[in-house]
Length: 337
Image (tube, rainbow, N blue to C red):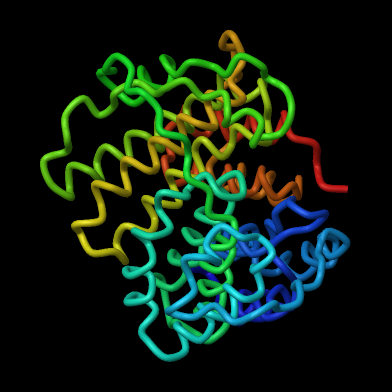
């Protein structure tokens, strides 16, 4: 975390006056984007980027009634309770260690990983990465509360689906995901058309470390796939990689017994996004000629929030195909205006 100026904390304090959505359902990507910008040495650009993004922010919605230990089940998945859930996790993380709160709620929230087109879990992943990297300052802990609150309010389990033929690798499994029949409309319309996912991994991972290895394989495969398939829906398909990477980033803060179910949920999220938006055929791509640092500088200058976050994930993988995928995202997604 290359932040010696307090820029991230300042940015988060600005953003915590805003809600996690706008126009009823579009996600506020700013907390995730500014974390990635700071991490990759772009702290001087953060406040300027936020000034530009400000038009996309809306105030935090009004509270309704407090979420409590007694009534949280009825509030789970109710987007009208976003402010109530945020306040609940604000109290929880103020009174208890943030790791304890995360460990308690992660298995509750994990089945709803598709919530908000996977943006809540991605926001949690960025938050946890920051908390693990340095001092758990008040704005950074509050950011986790905001992320968890958003996830709880938008909690959305995927439908029960049949398991299809096994696949020998994450890349093969993504290739075998059946595309939804009607590739139009929003993600909610598309998720109702899911027919099943390939059986991957073919065997239950032999322990937490094997689950982590398989999850890394999934992030690598979904990042690589964007280079050839991202053109199908350049914005939405970034989530096939950034959602499982958010889970991977969270693993070190979780009890190891949660790593295997985290892999299963991450696979479901990546497969669901792939099914919802994948094009019929791959397309050629141009290898990246820039270094990783140069690519992120280009993404930051490009300014699009999804492009910044996807490039951040691609740099986690770091190989030539991942860097080519980052270049493809910069080419495909419209720059911020």
